Structures are given as structure tokens and as C-alpha cells.
Length: 255
Figure 1 (cartoon, rainbow, N blue to C red):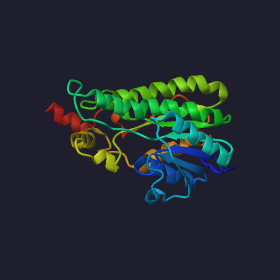
Figure 2 (cartoon, one colour):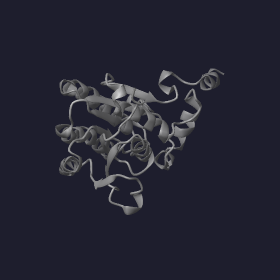
Figure 3 (cartoon, rainbow, N blue to C red):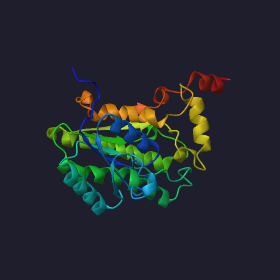
Figure 4 (cartoon, one colour):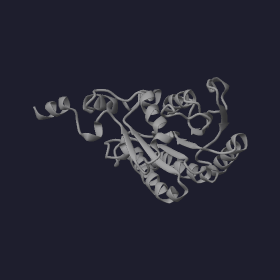
């Protein structure tokens, strides 16, 4: 019997793999035997090219750039077995009433439209049995105060995920999403996000936010053939946050 979750010689295109969650995913998939193409707007910076992978500049808001990326991956390896959409934007911490149109545009262009266009241009190079994994958010499964622009874009990612799963099922291509809480990366600690982190550390039943490696582990499973009948799903990596608030937070509110 072969070892579980093997990705030996599987060709993975990872969008946004030079830092944070994407870097953790890249390291894990390479260790599992995958051949990696890491793409993103920072992929051409030599200081970030630290892993044994092929790096390609790509902008998910530029459809031509995505088309070129997939053609390069195909020319190099002959097919694309796994697509991981990890590029993301968290633009604006404000109420619906205070939000700017530019904040919605920034989030939707990268998170939602970028996901849809990346799938569009990758699928022609993907054989039967391939897997597409979209990094969404727990903010795509419920409302989140002060994050209306982000939450709405992540809800859109889940809609794209489910629709693509239906449309690509006849091609035997699976499409799933991973929905973490805030993840312990530099982006989560940017100015303006402090209240969100304090709330999650109190409200999440496990009492903390996610680690990048914990998200990478779920991506690894979905990339492997061991998840061959998992399709159209949104899998939480949220410490129980989507189940409800922690008992400590409940007791504090009940006082």
C-alpha cells in the first residue's frame, strides 16, 4: 500500500507562494514530492525564491498574465495536476457605512475575480483527477463586523468554488475551499486588525488563531488522491469558531 497523501511528480501551480500561508503550503507540497510552480506579483524577487520551485511573475487581476502563467507551467511540465489559489487581499477595516468603494474593488479583484480567472485559464491544462483548492476564509461563511469588503469577497470565493465544482465534475476535476480564521502571518498583524485578533483569540474555542502549517495540512489533503471524493466543499480551519463562541467568551457575555 502506498503512503497516504503522496504528491510524487504531481505538478502544482501555487498562486501566492512566497510568504505566509502560501509559503507554508509550498514547503509542505514540495516535501510530499510535488513539482511546484510558484506564481505571484513578488515571485520575480530573488530574495523570496528560497524553495526548489519554478517561479513565475503573475498578476491575478491581469487575465493575460494568468494565461501566460498556465502556458509556461504546461510547457515546462506537460500538465497541471493541482491549482492552489492563495493570493489574497485584506483591504480596509471599516463598517459597511464607512467602507469605500476602493476597498471593495481591491478585495473583489484579487479574492473573487482573481480566483475565477485563475481557474478559467488553468483548467484547459488539467487532466482527469486534478484538484483545485481555493483559500477562502471563515469570513466567507458568516458576517464579520468591520470586514464587510473582505467578507463579501470571500463569500464570492465560496460561490465560485461550488459553481466550478458542479461545472467541472464531468471533467473529473474537484474544486474545494479552505476557510481559516485569521492566520499567524505578517498580514494578520497589520495595523487596524488588532481588534479582530483579540476577538478571535477569545471567541475561538481553541483559544488562538491558526498557524500557516495547519492550513497547509488541509491543502495537502485536498491536493492528494486520498480526497478523491471530496468536491464542492468549504472546509474550516478555524479551531471551532464556526461552531460557535468559546465557553469562556459565552460566560463573559452572560455575566
